[in-house]
Length: 279
Image (cartoon, rainbow, N blue to C red; front, side):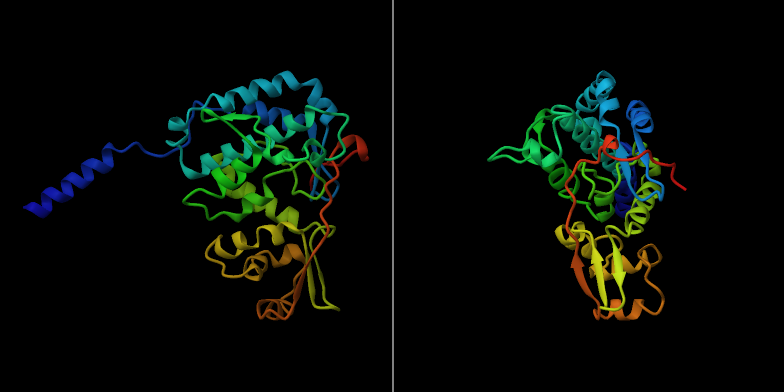
């Protein structure tokens, strides 16, 4: 009888707890529209360029969206499922990064120009969120990577630092319901970019983006329990151009890893030729 009562009490408590789900009353439609208007894939679909001049002309719409992000109380955010929380924070990071560039645009050649002698651009407290002024590093390393349930290194392919070396600023908003597909697509596109990731068979070297140097631990411990960076990379072997003959040697650690120089120049559309749509 006692055991039955205990089970009943547990079930009652579970039913009484608020279900974690996406919030149907919160919309990223405004950000989605801005991205579709002002961000374009390159011809190979591996990178994007941002039309900051057009964003600046449309800055009022951007600011209205930023205000909706800042108006979300932490208690409301906590009721969302983890995918919706991650999508929200990725959008916060990317949208406020665009806003940061616009504060000095067109007189900015790199996001690093926006830092001072003491404080970097990523340490500027200009993001009002959850009742506090936050900086971009806090959103990435504190709220996203610092979350108790963090196991998703592919967010590094979704966060955009307004630089050519960064993974693409996706021309659509991230959504909880679509996040898995979006992160997988971002990963595939980034790893397929031979300017940032490639294999040198003659020297038995994998040449990778510095992202894998900075966050190698995330890729080793996350995403299904991969214990080494190579394990993660081999899941996307085709994107990297790794053949079935290469894979055993890479898994065995016979390939060295070199990290390529990061390009911090602004990912500005005006500096480049027009882009084609992604294939």
